Amino acid sequence: MGKIILTGDRPTGRLHVGHYVGSLKRRVELQNSGEFDDIYIMIADAQALTDNADNPEKIRQNIIEVALDYLSCGLDPEKSTLFIQSQIPELTELTFYYMNLVTVSRLQRNPTVKSEIQMRNFEASIPVGFFTYPISQASDITAFKATTVPVGEDQLPMLEQTKEIVRKFNSVYGKTLVEPEILLPDNEACLRLPGIDGKAKMSKSLGNCIYLAEDEKEVQKKVMSMYTDPNHIRVQDPGQVEGNTVFTYLDAFCKDEHFAEYLPEYANLDELKEHYTRGGLGDVKVKRFLNAVLQEELAPIRARRKEYEKDIAYVYDILKAGSEKAQKTAAKTLEEVKAAMKINYFEDEALIQQHIKKYQ
Ligand code: ATP
Ligand code: MG
Image 1: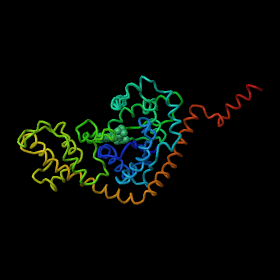
Image 2 (image 1 turned 45 degrees about the horizontal axis):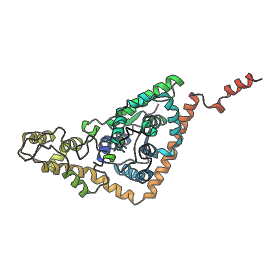
Image 3 (image 1 turned 90 degrees about the horizontal axis):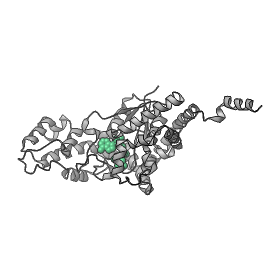
C-alpha cells in the first residue's frame, strides 16, 4: 500500500498565514520529501457551498485565488495533483452511501461543527449539507485512499469521523477503505494560529487575517495594529506573553537566525520573552521584529505569485488536468465501494445466474 496525501482548503477567500503554518508549509515539505506516492490537494468548493449556498459567486471567484496561493507557496503541479472538489461527482456518490453509516447524534457531537454553527448563527436552522460536511470530508479522504492528512487542529474531529466511517464500512462490507492518519503541525503555536485581533482562530470568515498575497505595506500595517497584552500600557510595565498574539506569531514563525539578523541584542525568543515579562520592552519594538520575520517569509511567496498571475490560463489548465486525474482515482474507489456493497448488479454474473435459475 502506498503513502498518499489528501488535504485541501475551502475557496471562501484568499489563504492566510494561519493556513500557511497550519498546513500549507508542511504540505510543501512533504511534497519535496519524495516519501509520498501520490499527493492530492483539493479546493473544496462543494464544501464551501454548504454554508455559502446563496453566494456561489464568492466561491467561484476564490478558486483561482486559492490555486495561486498554492502555487506561490511552492506546491508543484508536477508532484502534487491540484483539483476542484465539485468536478469529481464520485465524491458526492460516496457521501450518499456513507450517510447510512453515521447517526444524527454522532454528527451533533462534532465540536468543530458545533462552534462553526454558532459562529454562523445557524443554531435555528442548519443547512443539512453543512451539518453533514464531515461525512463529505470522509468521502474526499477515502476516495483517494489517503494515508496521511496534513491539516490544522480544527480538523481532528473530521479525521475521527472519517476513521469511524472506514471501520464501520470495512466491518459491514469487507475491507475496502483505508484508515487515514492526521498530521498536525509539530509547533504548538501553529496548531491554531489566532487572528490579529487575538480571537482564537485566524479565519477567512472572521476577517482577522494576514493574507499570503498581501503587499509589504498592508502586512506591516496589520502587524503594527495587532492585539497584545491590554495591561502592558507603558514600556516599563511588566508584560504577559501568554495569550499575547504577537508572541504567539513569533512562536510560529521566528528562528534564532532572525535575532542575529534583525534584533541582535537578544540571542533567542526566550530572552525576548523574559525581557517583556520583566518590563522595559515596548510593543512597538516587538512588532517591528515580527514584521521583519514575516516579511522575510512572505517575500518569496509574493514574488512567485506575481509570476503565476501573468499566466492565469495556465493555472486553469493545471486545475483541469488535476481534476481529470483525481476523477479517475475516485472512480476506481467508487467501483470498489459499490462492489463491496454489492450494488454493482451488471458486473455480478452470479446474481444474474441466481435469478435466471429462480425463474426457470
Ligand atoms: P473558513 O472560515 O471558510 O472555514 P478557514 O480559514 O477556516 O476558512 P479552511 O479552508 O476551513 O480555512 O481550512 C483549511 C486548512 O487550514 C485546514 O487544514 C485548517 O485546519 C487550516 N487552518 C485554517 N485556519 C487555521 C489557523 N488559524 N491556524 C492553523 N491552521 C488553520
Ligand atoms: Mg474552516
